[in-house]
Amino acid sequence: MTLEQAKPLGPIPAGFATSHGELAIAGIAASDLVARAGDTPLFVYSAQAVREQVARLRAAMPERLALHYAMKANPFKPLLRLMAGLVDGFDIASGGELALARAAGIDPARISFAGPGKRDRELEVAIAAGVTLNLESEAEAERALAIAGRLGITPRLAIRVNPEFDLKGSGMKMGGGAKPFGLDAVRVPALARHLVASGADWRGFHIFAGSQALDAEAIVETQAQTLALAVRLAREAGVSLPHCNLGGGFGIPYFPGDRPLDLARIGDALAENFAALPDECADTRFCIELGRYLVGEAGVYLTRIVERKVSHGEIFLITDGGLHHQLAASGNFGTVVRRNYPVAIASRFDAEPEEVANVVGCLCTPLDRLADKGSFPRAEVGDLIAVFCAGAYGASASPSAFLGQGPALEILV
Image 1 (spheres, helix red, strand yellow):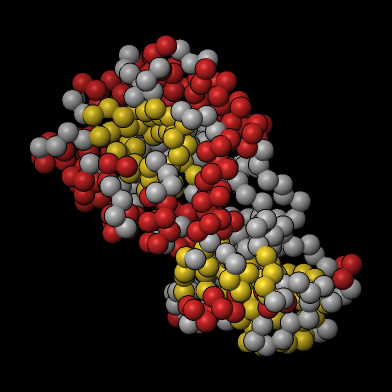
Image 2 (tube, one colour):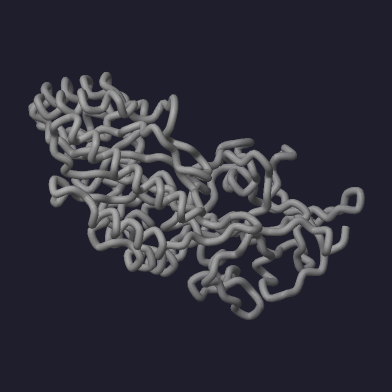
């Protein structure tokens, strides 16, 4: 296969440099990072890249808008500690994530807890700690109220709403139609009235319509619909709207042809929508919850070539990593058609492509493919492969126990 016939690779995020021919992350050569960590495979997260992304986002969004970090994207403890000084709140989806957040020193009062299958023991720990619960059903609300009554604690309760719309073009649709997430909008007013009458600390609504969208106009439309829905539901319920989580949905470019989000367009439109809100929302606190958008492009997965193999004329670069750490890059995490992530030969980052090669992992399955027929410089055993956009849904969203391989190393630099 010629270079012209190679399949395109995804776009490498901005901000990565070369050091003596190697990929540099946060100014440190990839081989030095591996030496510092002690081995491969290795996830490297750049603290500076995270800080810069948060700063760009805050500069584009209205000052009124608070920023929450969705922990499911990456719960690495040093990263959580970094985020604690950069964001206004944290969103979790399990009791396990609550334990990780508390171990990282995060104040539970800054945490909200969503998820459709909360167990009683998770509810009890969260209520006792002062976490805001985003209730997903009337039954969950009754369980939470009963637990709070037994503990003698006033619970902080919000309702997660299943809106009648979704986020157009989103990678995963979280709203619209029958969903396991949240309470159908038509049933929200009655539950809101019940929570307020029960004496709970009423915290408003959580409305999440979708994720991983790259279309700014779709996000603008969804945010406008979300604001209108929140106001309508509060009015129908006859309750105040102290807080409203507008969800997330901001995507990052993974694949060939993807383009970055137009943040300015989203921020300008949201400012206009805030200005048009009715008087009863003058004191409402609004936030968005983002995970991959804040940390995804700040992470790189480094894995070492252990064998260079040719089969039926095709080159296979076999690495010590694979889908057990980078399930999404292998195409097995929600994608319908497999496309290449941004991948490079980290050891030869400034070299021109010479050959078409497949980058595969060490697992005994044909699904374990990190790059399919991409164009690369010639690579040899011992060279490092870099998979970019690895800061979110990598280490914690992949089956690291598969075939007994175990987890990758992780460092924050």
